[in-house]
Length: 264
Ligand code: NAP
Image 1 (cartoon, protein in one colour):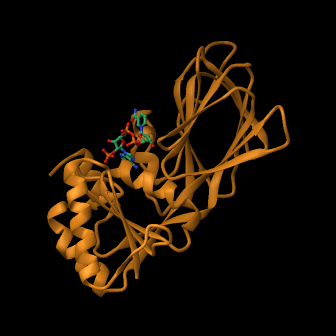
Image 2 (cartoon, helix red, strand yellow; image 1 turned 45 degrees about the vertical axis):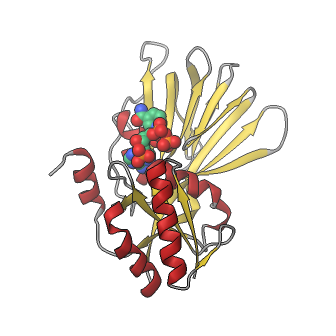
């Protein structure tokens, strides 16, 4: 089996990365940063997000597992002191794969036929560089509302515990192939009226955002951010692709939610 190990870059995570590489090589596994079967991330959820984007063209062949050197993560749920156990699991046992849904984002521009396609593990957010975002929101081909406010966030189920949660969105179990649209400070008056509640859309629905004001937009895909002058539309739906996590022991999603947000 071929493996790669990524690190958040701090001393603790770098030292643990080296230890894992040494252990796995002793077991006869091959270090391969181009085409790994398994990617072990050391750091936090942010480290796993970076690794996901680095290997996004190999999602069918690569599985991820995360170790947290800070607080417990949703993607990074192994503790540093469990590293020996994890390494033995990786080297000796065929692992179970759990697949989580992803978000497909297609950005179209006014000045050309070409579109840009992205995959998000957590979410896509749409804001403006100055002033408020004004945009029509179409759901499944029909106009739903005109939004005016700070921005909109469209998250995956596993991203629902990240930015979406801070916006008052619901926490969704990652087995639900769906996406969630949540508002950032919508302005509601006689002209602009939005539903005000987060919406959870199923796999076969599309959400299309069509900006109405001519302003520079800031679009984020997970930790990546881009500024765009001439956005015609941003189309979101549940992606065909999925992300694969290597599972070696039961650690349920709700247990992770409880340990992260409520405590013992
Ligand atoms: P960051 O600003 O350095 O860290 C954002 C925080 O979100 C970190 O504590 C990270 O955990 C945590 N996180 C990431 N994915 C998560 C998930 N699925 N569930 C629960 N917590 C999660 O940025 P970053 O590390 O590059 O991560 C980018 C993410 O930050 C975005 O995808 C977005 O979800 C999130 N974000 C949140 C807010 C907010 O809540 N107001 C605002 C902007 C961005 P670790 O410490 O384990 O890495």
